[in-house]
Image (tube, rainbow, N blue to C red; front, side, top):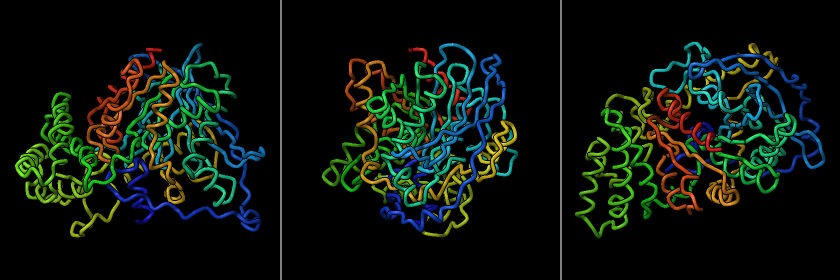
Length: 498
């Protein structure tokens, strides 16, 4: 698999039912010559600040934007990286603070910042969006800034954040599952320390692979750095990847894809609503799962299942029959729009683009959403940071870094997911609350995986402490104003509970 294909599969989310990413070879020690050849880096600018305002819920919210850096140091105290953050703070006592990060590995935090919860937003991720449209920032009606300060963190190799050590050493220090969790947790600790916010209420939000990071960072902060989060929000998280395994005998992979494919069909039919989706979920974890488990011993049940799946998805009955009612993501995305010469996005299957290679047996180009979001987010963020805030830097901004993704060494920890740390963090703190949020149309991190995962968690005296919420839309469901507003309302209710 090429690096770009790997990134398309994993960058915003590790996908279901695709080959595992081709991670880089094992680490090799950096020799003295390589270290000496590491080019000297110019110092990044000092922190920059600007006053701004936005409008939300009919009110004007005035705030300070800070773009700055925090050093990452090795065990000897040597600075080995610079992590760049963008913070939005409002004057006042007892303000909570929320730390936000995206995923990839290789994604900057710009998607949550300028798409979901920051005070300004740029349009991206919707049908018919053009990469060449003006990347204009406007007030974000869905921002969380009126009820929490916000700190967006760009991991090393993303945004303007950078390593100061040779590549082989960077792989060990930053581009590896556990090392990534450790240094990002320390960045959160250091921001709190430097800004005298240790006693603030603290929250963490992670999207996609950031949702993999979320429980692990929370647990590491609790048990190693002595910092307790009050709440965690996981947006379209890559949470429990082993559910995708062994689709030859296990119904789990197909139980994860069917509800999102059915949701996309309901939306095209203008019938998408919570009640119809409840019916889809109940069929999926009931008759559909049991029929798949019985296999060839129940031919009549299999025939009923194929007819039901055809009706639920609107797909060609021949296609559904040949697939045995088991709908693989990429095959579906080519099939559903084949007659139009288009492809659906795995991040929102109702967002399409023309297939430049319609007669190839497999998809050759990247995802319709993945490539189209880089230009507007990069342009808007670079202009905002360098011109509006005045943080003058002469460097490339990496909204999505293929290099970081190629170098990433996930190892066994990546395949384990983060359910163990989620359970442990909730068990440690009886007041910790977790919201897991998904778009129904997302096939990269399907919502059904989180539904099944949370259903199996112990209640720990209050089952509402860990909840799954679903909305119309895909992986970045917040690009739709109604879904973004519903997300904001649900999150604000959780914050209010504290």
